[in-house]
Length: 296
Image (spheres, rainbow, N blue to C red):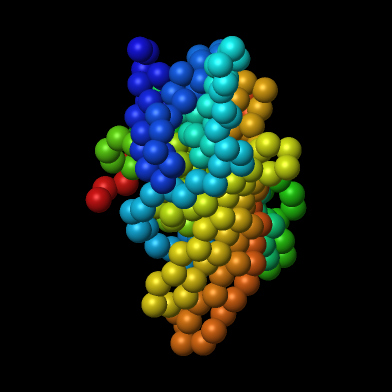
């Protein structure tokens, strides 16, 4: 059994804790996995997470809702594969999307919503993400695990209220230590994990939130979950689109939240769209010329 098959088998046994008593159709999904085989700065994270307000990381088991019963077999009939639950299908897609490079785009439609674009290769811990704003293009670079953060000149004319002394464009801070992901990646530890640009984080986030995974009429995965703490709650629904190789292509997450963190009731909704594409792309990042080492 190769690495992909082993990871998929472990993930299936993990995700089917809520399935009815039967042997998971691992063979069907392993075949699918074989056929399918062919992250911005802390400021970025804070800007996006502010829309969500509430996070909770409770370890639980993903609840699955099969869309059909298992087929019966009578004498003389050939045996048919067992029905594959939506959760198992999503686990297969997540596994097929791991350990391979890709481009990504994360769009937030909230007030002052931002768009992050970049690429990442988990095998070499190399990638980049850029977020254009009116006064700069905030940029994070990751080169063989070394992280650099800085800002480039804005794409358009600098607003009048932001003219004057500002940051030095093209200067980057180099952070100590080694990193295996861009800082935009939530790692699945909070509500934002479902649209963190890391396929593995999607699975982690849904499991942590005790999500219910079902199927849309077109067969694509759909999930819902609600998390709460003493300051408020967040309810989310999401839809996952797979590409023709069975990998994650798009995740659309709609969040409704309410919070009393500021001593009053605040509430709102937001929709974020994550797109992953160009799997297998060569990711090359050049070290910036103007670097200042950051000490911690």
